[in-house]
Image 1 (cartoon, one colour):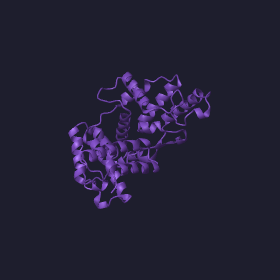
Image 2: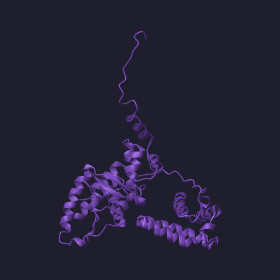
Image 3: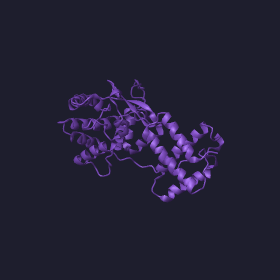
Image 4: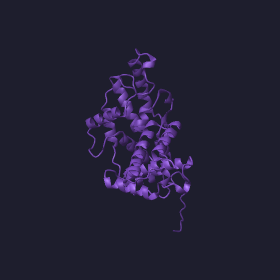
Length: 317
């Protein structure tokens, strides 16, 4: 018999060995430790082998009772627990048939329509930035990259100089998954300008004083997520963005997805660009499109659009 807290620590060690991202490991441990505290402290179950589906359901009920989490958040917790118990099966701590998560179903999530930026707002946000200093051009490029590629803010922070190629950028995504995103013409234009200013800004520093991340603050240190949040918020306020748009970097991701769908991209390709593991995750962005958008996409991509169909008229009619 093995104690739950020992196996959580063993899971952490394995994730580190596998090279999982620190943020991913951090959120997994937070979720597992909270579940472990309830299971041991409230239910009195200390051994992993003793955990049964009823105990998991009791934990779900407890999260619902607290009432501070929507079903989607609880489902995210369940997803982490499924990964944890599958690890226990793989390492033969428990048998497959003893996995308590096997028959635990996700809660029904409310289907919400994502309200995001419109084209005019995006234009005003980006154009609100002047191009006079290193910080100005850096911040403008950051916003352009968020809107133009749909990458997560954490992914943007983690871009290193060696990740930049002529036509694409290597992105280090969730769960240590890597993918490529394109460099558009507008991105390339501002990347060149930014790189010149960056060299000038840090020319008096020794190489070992400059972090090898692409986006740096004034001290040559990797930009933080909170700083990028503030950059976006500031220019959203200046641009007079609608109140129903949260103005978070994730809303830039929503804009990217819906814009690509309006432009006729297929769900699979969009899923690849966004770094989703499942196209079902990507399909939720369809809910934000108006019926007219859907009809126009169908019209533009009509199956018969490129076919040559001859007009065959019966003269007797």
